[in-house]
Amino acid sequence: MADDPFNTTTIDPGINNMPDPELFAEHPGHKRKHKKSKFENKKADISINSLLDVFSVLLVFLLKSYTNSTVTIKPSRDLTVPFSISQVDAEDSTCLTVTLKDIMLDDKPIITLENGKVAERDLSHGGMMIEPLLGSLQEEVQHQRRLEARNPKSAFKGIVTVISDRYVPSTVLMQIMYTAGLSEFSKFKFLLVKTER
Amino acid sequence: MGFNPTSRRHYEIDEPELNLNPMMDLFGVLIPTMIMLSAAVEVSVINVVAPSIGGEPAPGTPPPKTDIPVNLTVTISDAGYTVTALGQVVAQLPLSERPIVCSRYRGTVPPPRSKNKDRPKCGEKEGQLKKTFLLYDNPALTAKVMDIKNEYPDERRVIVQPGPEVEYETIVDMLDAVRDVKSEKGGVKELFDEVVMSPGS
Image (cartoon, rainbow over all chains, first blue to last red; front, top):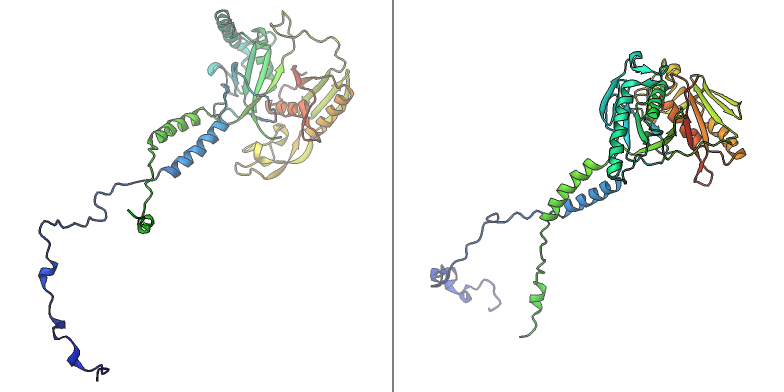
């Protein structure tokens, strides 16, 4: 009979009674722990390690492309500098920027061109010397000579860096070189955009 | 107290948290500075001298050579190059029709523009596209000056005589063709790197 699963005489009759609530009551002196809300007072912890990695790569790239040359090409609609395979680096010197509209000495406009040519009234010496440019270059020479007298390290080298637009005719270049030659500038550096061979 | 393996299993490594904010601040300053200082384009120069026009030479100018045997001169016109050496014309290099990659001439045509102005321009977005134009024969010029260089290895001076309407870009391309050449071994062989600009006729 003991194996009879339907023998209800062996089942505790109090099995379906409700449990005593006292058993679940809080003990005196015991503080109930309040479950904290999932988002309550949680400090936002953003990981910036990835951003730091990106910045490091960017900084290395910029350091590599950094050039200490003071001679740079300022972007302009009128100035498209030709490409060259030359690998000679530029050095700090007086800059003459030539476009089809004007000639600038160290970013200061000196003379306005007419249809890409120097006006006849600004020329002398058989059409080779640009008079307004001569005056400005001579002032620049005097300025550099004064600097040289004060600081022998900044010796006057007589170098002009020519930054010219690709369309400028050779006549204007020759006039500039002739004029610069009269102002003690005898060496010229044509500044170009470096390209692969 | 005995070793409790359960505590090892639940042990959390207390990693020290680095304060990276100062470093981020530093980068935040450095990167804009570097961007401002870095050149937008890489530049190079070609050294050129003007012919002496009388008066005393500038200080530091080397005395002119009196024993120049070659006097290599390249005259540029809208018809092409004329190469002169030892007072004689050694080569006439007319324009040649060749395909060229458009990347250097976006929005324009290559020189001589007076000859190519009626041809369709290289488009702004046609970087690697090749188009055919009338071009100065720079490869032939390089080959010719290499022959002269082999004959006169000590000579370094080239006189450039551009015509009055020859554009600056043409002069630069010509100088690139005569100044040096890539050797077969991968290096660069100097040809005529002392450039003298002289007004053309």
